Image (cartoon, rainbow, N blue to C red; front, side, top):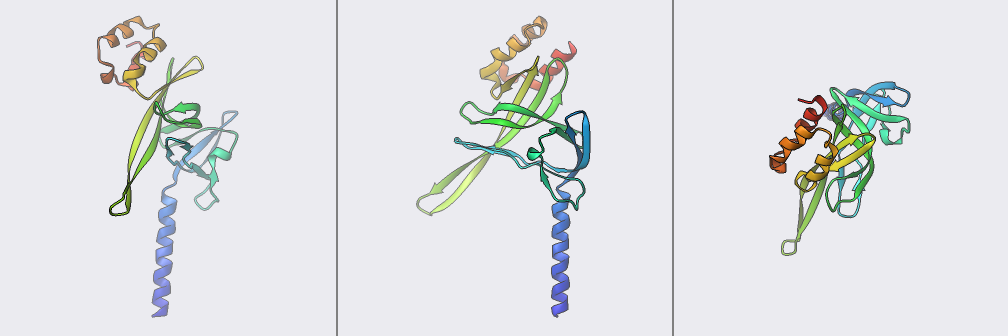
Amino acid sequence: MKLSIIIFTLCILTISSVAQELIYEKGYLVLKGNRIEEGYIKHGSSSWSMFDANYGITTFKATLESKRIKIRKKKDVIGFVIGADSFAIKEHIKVAKRSPTFRKDFVKVLETGKINLYVHESKKTVSYHNQQTYQSFGDTFWYTTYLLCKDGECLNVYDVTEQNERILELIKDDKALVTELRKEDPEDWEIRDLVKMYNTGE
């Protein structure tokens, strides 16, 4: 009986260990000097509250059996790749009008060209407390911020309707595209399509 319990426990621990390793995906780090370091990466989402920004924990393992390393602590890392997705590091990311600023965080690369387009995703959990039942619960909201980077400067776009004039200013050298966009409601603008049209001239 005891032997059966021991075997069962070992099986559970093994399955748990394998499950934990599966959350790491094959990829590589992009290092300064155009170097790469292959291994396995787990990318954690960032979050925020009205008071502070909490950076997601993104870790790297050379092999699945290796000790994990927090990528943020590797000073020579400038980005990483998981599958077909590339990530870069950007600074001063504002995700909402009244949010704190992420001083430096990972962003996903969407488009490259005259304007490089990145997206930053973060979550905010709002907690509630019922004074009658003494129960606490919360809702999680996801925030998407686009970074349009041109000539070394980046525009944080978290509200297209509110920031539409700044977007038009960024692409003002393409007068035909600006004219077309002014005919549309900014709420209907698709940022990725807009950047593609600007980069390709189509």
